[in-house]
Length: 145
Image (cartoon, rainbow, N blue to C red):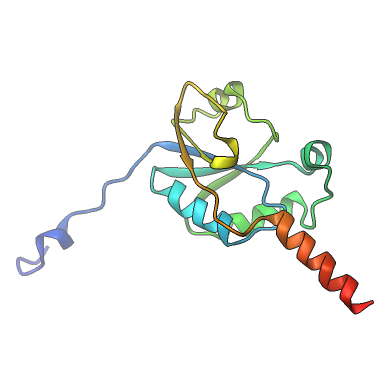
């Protein structure tokens, strides 16, 4: 390295090797999802457990506008995401252990969940959800009729 370079420029960034899991449905991805993903990535290598289409139908009673493969492709294009794996709507300790997760990140809508791993909960982004977008789209469609 050149002697005139600032000390901070000479240091190579520390690699945080913690495996961080964030489970998401992302039936309609929006800026609230992106904000949560960005926050979660600060804890290590971010793995997203993406709810399967089958579980979205079973537990949320929705047929996702974007199928699993489409949602996965979008999430993988976000620079903070290291990996996307299929997951069930209900996250359990067995799944976390199987994937060797160090830290679980969740939105405040799941604040009652408990795991033996470190658990970090972030508040929801106000005034946005996939459900809200779905309702607005329906309202706009009905206006045109």
